[in-house]
Amino acid sequence: MIIIGVENMHKYCFVFALGYLTVCQITRVYIFDYGQYSADFSGPMMIITQKITSLAYEIHDGMFRKDEELTPSQRGLAVRRMPSLLEYLSYTCNFMGILAGPLCSYKDYITFIEGRSYHMTQPGKNGKEETQYERTEPSPNIAVIQKLLVCGLSLLFHLTISKTLPVEYNIDEHFQATASWLTKVTYLYVSLLAARPKYYFAWTLADAINNAAGFGFRGYDKNGATCWDLISNLRIQQIEMSTSFKMFLDNWNIQTALWLKRVCYERASFSPTIQTFILSAIWHGVYPGYYLTFLTGVLMTLAARAMRNNFRHYFIEPPQLKLFYDVITWIATQIAISYTVVPFVLLSIKPSFMFYSSWYYCLHIAGILILLLLPVKKTPRGKNTHENVQLSQSKKFSEGENSLEQNSFSTTNNVCNQNQEIAFRHSSLKL
Image (cartoon, rainbow, N blue to C red; front, side):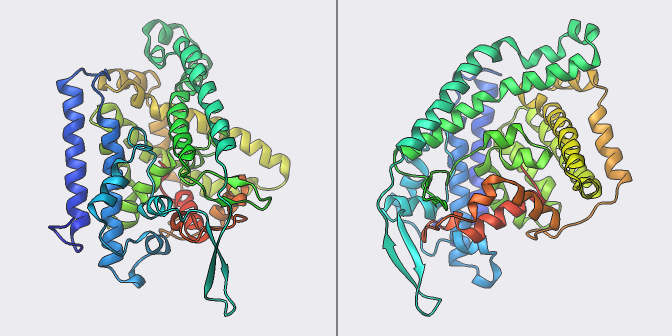
């Protein structure tokens, strides 16, 4: 960052950090034990890579690019001075997020460290100037206890039910030969449902740790209740009740999806969706299953978008028809997600292709036919569509978002930036 200078630091930091991470991934997988995690040091490296690259782009935006060239989100996140070595190491290696994250913006972290998280603003007399005042520091105890309860239930579910429903059974020869089609579909969904709680446990625990330290406060809702989801990484209810491929991914690994958007999608010169999925696969590691999952994810994302754009408006009214549409799309979404992520769990090439061949690549074929037969409505990046607005309004989280009292220093999550980021994720990549 210091030697290269602000003009090109983002490019060099991105290549170096991601390259170093890839070397670490190769070392862990092929030098230690393939498929084992006895020497898995790559998790912290993945989080640090996100922080290094995010900060490099934020400094580049703040110290080199002109304000008029930046999007509102980039302008809010831009860092206007080079951090000191202490600030840099504190951000990248702080104990709260060193093991499992989640990622946070540099500005939000520094705001928390400097004790400005609870400073609020109100408009001045001229409508432009803002006066600052400090509210009583809220307690995170209730939020932490709630998240620890979720952790306990997720861990219990993983240690009991998950063991009896292994994903690997989907490619068992006897199961494939004797099970009916309905049984295969049902077991696929249930086995992948049982595989998710370990992620719920890790991400919710990481969020609770940050909250316990006082980090993660986003403001107050209209009822005056505190919101401790500034850096939350998932929303479980929305994940399990998703009625579209993108809605599922909107609420899964949220901070990583925002990182992919900020460093890749909105800066890509061509095929941003494809580039972003490839970057996500590289960041996750070198197992072939990751690449199969994310390449399939590109197809599923584009096909689901085409289906939604062409058919959803026919099912909005009356409410009974909308309910029928929601049920059908929920079933289709859960099957599509499960089908897509099986290689992510199996990791290797051979079992992944065994699974897809047992399904006759049906969803791959369906996705290709949808893209070939249905017209695709192109939406400019960063723009809201009528459909996106409707979807965002349908979410309780989004409704609550607009009623928060905003933190003057928490630039990542102010109203403008949050709505823009939600709109982006609804109209483009959702990882």
